[in-house]
Image (cartoon, rainbow, N blue to C red; front, side, top):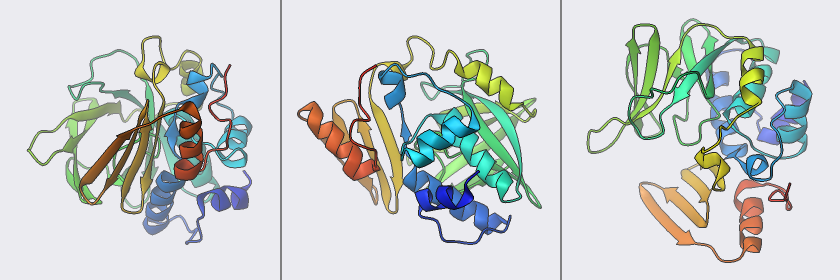
Length: 254
């Protein structure tokens, strides 16, 4: 792990001791600088879940990635700094309903300090700061998230202003091996997944979020949302550079 290069990629200059404050700052900064994006999927490029390959892509290549990639490399960073990290497997809800699909399609992290914390820098629009792994309602950056324990599974939901609670994902606290995710990544995302059909690139900003989804650019800030339809493909390339820092040519073909 080239620690200095990774921290430079994040623009991070904060503390490095394995404390909750360090974890919180790293989590926020990672979300702001390394976007969730599916450009390799659309370009027919395989996901390679090896540490050196992930480092080449996300750090040296100034790219983002999918949940397996972003959380996988973030776990390496945290362990390098002395954090105790456990891999957990999650099942994502595609519709806001309780996820019922078998298997798992997301990686989340459990970090042990004096308490246990849920960490996830690879889901797109979710919580900004680590959440305590305790059932309850937890606010972060002006939004409320709800953790529930259902027998052997835990679940995460986002509480909306109208009181509804769409599920984001369910996960097991049973520790998993990295090899489990490597095997799952060989055929991920599965056929029919929206990630195979439409461009998605999103990252947190200091005051909101910027998202490029298909032909639309969506800017959210302070509860306000502005959306516009894009023109030529060249404009998408420029937006990937200006809003996400992704190199020109990232939308390249197979």
